[in-house]
Image 1 (cartoon, one colour):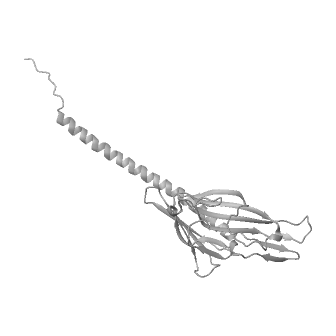
Image 2 (cartoon, one colour; image 1 turned 180 degrees about the vertical axis):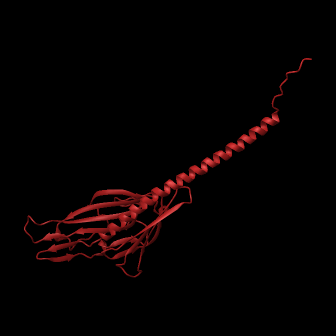
Image 3 (cartoon, one colour; image 1 turned 90 degrees about the horizontal axis):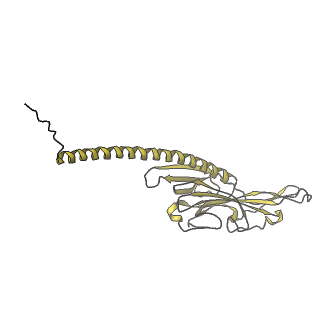
Amino acid sequence: MIKSNTRRGFTLMEIIIASAVMTLFMTGLFSLYRGGSNLSNATLWAQQTINQLKLACREINTSIKKSTYPASLTFPGNISENTNDNFALHHFNGTMYATQTVGIGGAGFEGAKVFALTESTPAKIGFAAADNKDAVIIYHVFSLAGNGNLHYGRWRETLPGANVAALSRPSIPPGGAVSEFHAILARDVESVTCEQTSPGNLRSPLLVKITCKVPRGETSRSEQGVGTPNVTLVPHNNIGGW
């Protein structure tokens, strides 16, 4: 008796079912991979952002502590100080969102000013010509751009000490100042908040809070710094160059 050696193939229905099962398996595997990848990216973003924010707040605190009115040291030791409001610590009063700064520019800085201040090195006047030094004025500007970058710029201006008493600078930095440093302190910034710690006290410390948000996500990180100025605080309610 001869046995039949016939082999039955897969039916169309079996192939369809197997394909569906394989598709579901691959979809689940891809979703698991994508979820793990997103979590890894969010964790890396958070770590990098936290480091950026700490460094940014340190720079902010340091700059605020350097705030001074332009001063001249006159022999035998009298100090002439220009306390004009132009040289106060100017800041946006409240919370500024990056989206609000789109299209707003200024003289040498990016976006809209968050706060700006002046640092002065007194000049020696009345000494021998060899000992005399001009006044050095340094302008610090922190600004927020529409793309979420928090910028820091520093400008320098050298002036004869005799001119300090009558010095006026309606715009910081002024046109004649020379740019000496620029850096992006933080990226993906959603908002920056500036508030006086003691409302009504024009010499109270200034609290600056920076909030960053991951692009196209919900993860966010915040950091705040508090700097005590040596000058009067001048709040501004308008977003722009002031």
